[in-house]
Image (cartoon, rainbow, N blue to C red; front, side):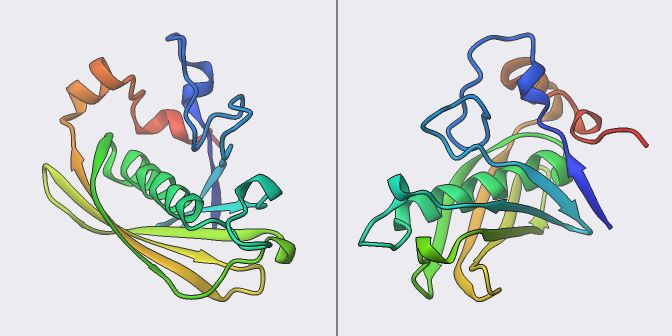
Length: 162
């Protein structure tokens, strides 16, 4: 069952939320929205011309940013804290053509300890072909620090009731 993930930072009392990956008001950002599909966080996204590398090909740096952002939402919703990316391995398998339209991003938690998480991500073309894969390692902050220093609202804030 797919469950919508709410972006609680939109209504955060702190000013200045402008995340390149997920802020809906960052005009130059990716403006990603997320859902939970079982144990995977997913997002769908339409590449625009400004994300182009070679003609009609989604820039590899944008692909990396999409996967890194997606994996960070796995940390927030499944690890129930925030973290920072300490390393990212990415494998580009097939060109992502802008003209093919909407892509799907999927990520899942592979391993978690008290201070570290490993998350794997996939970028799929509109026909379901895996075009890129990633493995992100995150340093996890203790929940209290996540809440006081990084405005983490707690895992319940990401899911609507009902």
